Length: 77
Image (cartoon, rainbow, N blue to C red):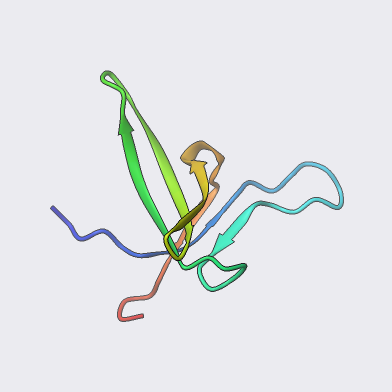
């Protein structure tokens, strides 16, 4: 099993309307202290989730289908 990389940010798709911005959760901004991921096993399929925390408090649970990109911390960071 490979070691899971630490997530720095998750970013949503670019909205299709003027004046709107994509969803972004970034460690170190708006109280976000860490982002974790997990797959919910539902038998014949799974749903991948990202969990956004401020300390021990879960702020957001984001379905992977809503995420356009995932940014990882650089090695040694």
